[in-house]
Amino acid sequence: MAQTGKPSVLNFIRHANEAQNSKPKHSPALGDQTTLTLGKKAHKEKVLFGSRVVYLELETVYIFAPTTSDGGREGELPRVDGFAAKLVDPPSPSLSPSCSSPTGTIVGQSPDTRPLRPPRTRRARERLGSDSSDTTTSYGMLDVLRSLKSLLKISRVHIDNNVFRLHYTVTVILLIAFCIIVTTKQFVGEPIECIHSSEVPESVINTFCWIHTTYTVPSAYGKEVGKDVPHPGIDSTQDASQFRYHRYYQWVCFTLFFQAALFYTPRWLWRMWEGGKIKALMMDLDIALCAEAEKKAKKKMLVDYLMSSLRQHDWYAARYFLCEAMAFANVVGQMFLMNRFFDGEFLSYGIEVIRYSERDQETRTDPMIRIFPRVTKCRFYKYGSSGNVELHDALCVLPLNVINEKIFIFLWFWFIILSVLTGLVLVFRVVITACPLVRVYLLNMRFRIVHLDTLHTVVRRGSIGDWFLVYMLGQNIDTMIFKEVLAEMAKRMTTEPKEAA
Image (cartoon, rainbow, N blue to C red):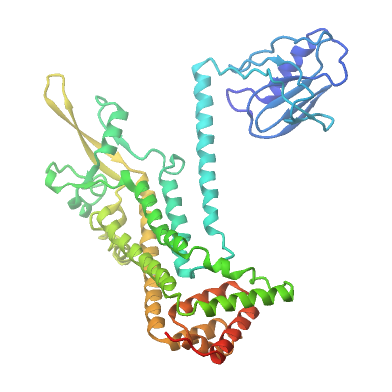
């Protein structure tokens, strides 16, 4: 807790101890206590100083000391680092507990405890403000990251497949995590730093170049760095027609968050349309250890529902297939959205990076530096002393692009993998919709303990919606119970007359 320019807690206690010892000693009454409020601290500690017990809580430091014989206060303690601390009245025994006493009992804080006055010096206030802002930012990031853990939790009820789950869990978490990273100075520092003349304030030129974009010269990428040009894409060309402006970097964090929202949209729609049907039909049959009478009653209710609603679940399955198609359209559409965002460079970004690693080091140009330049130029115009318009040419460093290039090369490969997997799932959906025999073998591969004849009967008498509902139920209830449910369904289908369509 002790830092440069700030007193340690032990020093503060030493001052308090000296102030107490300088007063006339009195015989304390048993149970009399006086509370000294120091302020907020970040850990918990117990310190013994003679007859005094100090408790360092997360919120407050409490010092318990004997009171005067007349029950009054013993005056002010020394001021430490701009803080003023006063001894306050003893806590009332009737108050609600707030901290631990030396004997293990709970003592409440006095209602007239005075809050600490803020530091009087500007330097002390700035130190306190910077420390609190850094702490707040760190805790805020941790809170956001902790909230993302809920997306990784595997639900007890499965209403979709693993590929669909990749869209709204892994992808959403990655995008939000990237969004947090690019907005945190702890990782990238200031997003832009510009070298310029002393006539323009640094904050003005940095803000202007950040808002109004910077540019590079594409023809300068082929020149030798350190000999012909100072940095890749930077030369003395004044022809504005050869400039390539970079307008994306201000919007990266918003784009990443928007992408995360789009990836979660199909999941949100499916949860709304599904309406908890699978969870309601489970009836806790995923746990086989239950009373036999209860199990039979639940199985009968499930079979009765499936038989009474036969051929009425096609729209239920169609909605899920539609959400899978939306997920595929979303990931493909985001590839083109990113391509538009980066002025037509994103679709070939990953391929260019692969080719770059295979080229000769002396002649190759890093595509990541071309799309995400680390050093750019910026033009700033202002009036001079004589009223003429003056041009100030600034050289700007974009440390944020070091992070951006890694983020989007990863997203390029991830979107490609996700597109391929989701596309294969859609092709598979078309096949099982058109070919009932494939549904039989798919159920047989997933639930091998069920007799093949039973599966043939259930699939032949039911529709694609019935197959989909049965398949989802099989993923959520106990395997032996699922086998008995399908056997009872097949028995009823063969013994009872088939209803007219």
